[in-house]
Image (cartoon, rainbow, N blue to C red):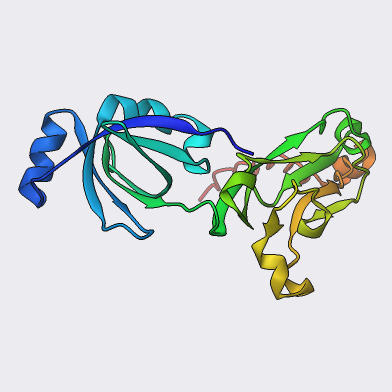
Length: 225
């Protein structure tokens, strides 16, 4: 089960673009909490707290504890708007979670022991990570912060598919419910063919022949009249 992380929030009463701009100038991020049996609630969060949390991978796939004056609600981050060029979070959406309600969440993939595998030690082999995250479904108590993939046994030419992943108890990959055609490749170990360098004789033959210097035409003698 993933760890939970607490973030302190405050309720906000003023809404609208003007109120949001004032909040941002004051160092806050406007946000909303929705879902479950309760009505949506508008909140504000200290920008420094949000920015610090957003630098961590867990922030995007873990259950968060939003602490509103002692009232703690378990939520997932569902949307975060960033400024196009400033290091600034503009708005956030959080969804309440219920312990008995199945979640669908995208979690990151962590690749382990790649360098120690046969494919990783072989010159000319490229190991491609076709996916870096995957959507899973599970109850909140079973939500992992990431899925680990052990590549210690990876051989040249191997392909690791979604169906090959070892998942924690109570966790499913949502796409695999729809059939084998949705079983995508996750890791591919591919041998890269290197083009052989031409032999010296071949290189010489391929090189354009140097143009011979043009001979000067003989000077004409003046004819006597």
